[in-house]
Amino acid sequence: MPQIIFLPHEELCPDGMVIEAETGKTICDVALANGIEIEHACEKSCACTTCHVYIREGMDSLNENSEEEDDMLDKAWGLDPDSRLSCQAEVGDEDLVIEIPKYTINMVSENH
Image 1 (cartoon, rainbow, N blue to C red):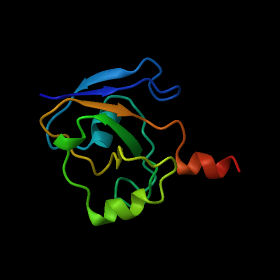
Image 2 (image 1 turned 90 degrees about the vertical axis):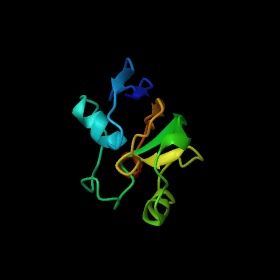
Image 3 (image 1 turned 60 degrees about the vertical axis):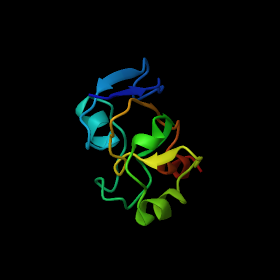
């Protein structure tokens, strides 16, 4: 079973976490099931970017982005080439290293 290594995040998992993940589950579902409260304002329907994460290792093992996900990602705060929506990215057969962004688009807009 692949592992997901969540890098430390100041609020959601300060010490980081290593989780055994079932292939085919989304990164968001695995995180939530293990107490990492990734924001998911649209209830995981690919209609927002609050669950945006960076895939620092293992990107090639994930399912392909859909056009819908790519369109949403274009709106994500802090978008980079390793970005995925965690509600859409399904665990494959390799270990993953995930970084949760410091801010979501909701946090950015609330602070301005």
